[in-house]
Image (cartoon, rainbow, N blue to C red; front, side):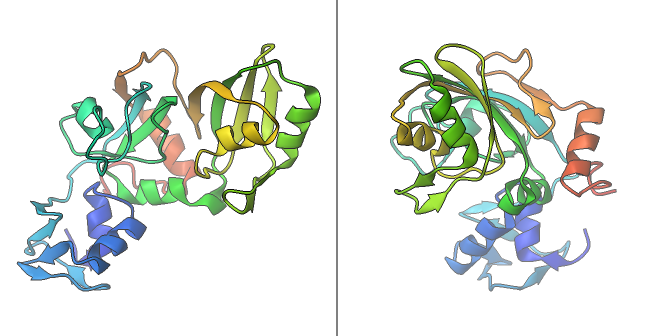
Length: 244
């Protein structure tokens, strides 16, 4: 491993994104060779890096998984009262973390990886990467409500107007939504703005990766073609082979 900035090293270990790594460093939760780390510092192959009480090791090979998150599983490890936590449910041999959450009451596709650069690229809102959802509501959908959400709606709780999105009606009470942003509980808030309540929410696609035949709780490693396409779309072509 060549010398690199500490936040990039933490991300390469699959701990979190670079932005969250900066927060951990500033909070005094990262140590290098037993000394509290400082923002902007660099580390090399001989340095011992610890974060949140655990020693970290840079991965030799990057992993990217497609996982079907069931309803009831939470994505955060900070909820002491959560009965089911994603990183414990997955049971994968390497430490991986999620790129884009789903709330506890939602289900469907989540991509997990130990490649912090990929997480950063996927999570940058300005990149406008698509995510597709199937949404079931409490009553039949009216064309006017669908049109309003497609154009973008103001969410008072967040103080933001949603980006225009694609919506297809696939059933009396079921729509398919394709978004390019990920605001907090965005779909539920959008539906509520039009007088609808969400009764079922499933994510079926993230960028070029589809949920496919996965069942709740199952995961699979991406195929080589899927990985190459994902990295290409994210502007990281050449980084999918362990950085070689």
